[in-house]
Length: 482
Image (cartoon, rainbow, N blue to C red; front, side, top):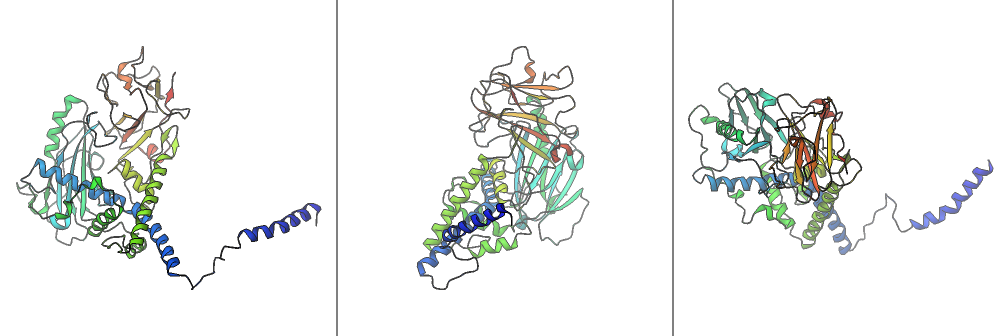
């Protein structure tokens, strides 16, 4: 044996006793005991409950947020149309978002919104009827009770032609009579529908409102008749004693989430996980344990999960200073942390086939964006965001602390291809200017006003082409010019 090998063997022999001593107090992997005290047993079971609660919290958060949103839409509909059944009718936003809107973070200023919730198990199959909408992007996203997108009605699916789309409950076995453009079976009984219709400018708003009024949602029983209202149903479970948005008690969270998951079966392929949660009292239709120690463990587990969420939000994957979009956005996946983060930050997001939102947080040198500096975002010739010609892209400015719109002197909150005065560079490229002060000797149409302090921008690409979906095309870095 070579002298060098001898030295290595000798060193290993010397280190072995120290390594063994360091692990002497640890059992072998296959060792077990049968003599634990009641206190030790309780401690072990509490640790298991804490771990399960952390996982169950993350897993169920999209369902909880779906339930929360349903209660708020129900409340809004009841206030605006007290004579109508809240579920099944549209709640329409008739104006574009402004800095005065403080409830929804990162609102878009590209479309007018509409929202509806339907309980297919009690209201039966429904028909969504849309008019012919040519030359303008629109969509109605269909979300299950876990905020997974299970269908799109709109420009990308019917090319703007008029359509009647039938949505069936998960287990419906009735006979379908009539001709429909499409028939979609929902994965859950409770579903949400969110409509978006492109607005070119403020003068275009009245035209879009007329289109909103022509999108009808009716029961299958009534779709050939003039009846547009849904019969009244009793829904006390959507009338919580306290606003769901103010929930702070982890045990209350699980009560609400568990009941909602009981009414709406979880995504397929999760049976083993659901069984583990349910046996612990944390899954669909489950009852929380009575033990004070187990309940305290649940509270601790939720704290662990919330810390993990905060860590995930604080450490996004970045490229060129932009957050790389989660490829599972709007889809069921085993990444429960990612699913929870998406719904917390971009509730009811599209799946990537319909739209991809990319958030700009840093400049090309890795520094946070601050409006007192001057920045440019330049798309080289032939490198504008590659979206379907029937759709569009936009860049929207937000306060970096609140993620809300910020008032500015020219009331401009986004740039898009239809922005008046938007001017291409001499070589065919496009340079956008981001700053609190208008850049000198540059077209005003290319200026996106920023707050003086921290800011972020969101690049929205509707109907993105394959280059965006695959990541071959990605936004260039935002460059600081001073």
